[in-house]
Image (cartoon, rainbow, N blue to C red; front, side, top):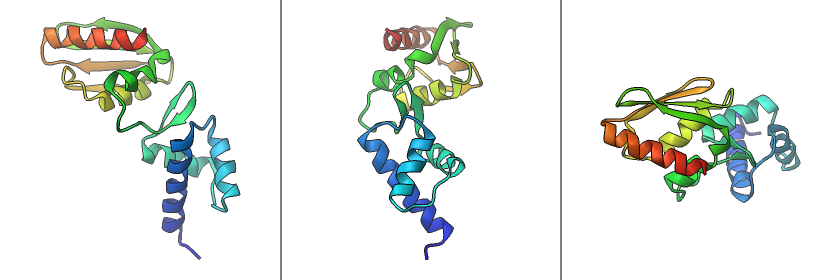
Length: 149
């Protein structure tokens, strides 16, 4: 019988394969599919697995970020959560999001690998993004606005 570490690895691999095929609408749908495959899964274990895998929740459901996805596409996946984008001085941009979505947006920004962004911090409904220069900030804001369109 596999130990819990082996079960976790098998479950995460199965989740990865399921999400590569299509987004999962809910965590419970993943639990159901994993159970059908004979794996032990609960909502809480799937939630931990999704976090460990770096999955994000989009309008289509839970998805794994694509390695071949451009920064624009990465942010477009969470664009529906963006509410406003405003500069706060020459090096800080404040992004307001839907309640509870800031960390998803911050993660998408991190994965975009845009050189205009030094880093960001995501709270509940606000993301602070640091840029090295005012020019970088303007480019970054334009990119985010383009992803929203």
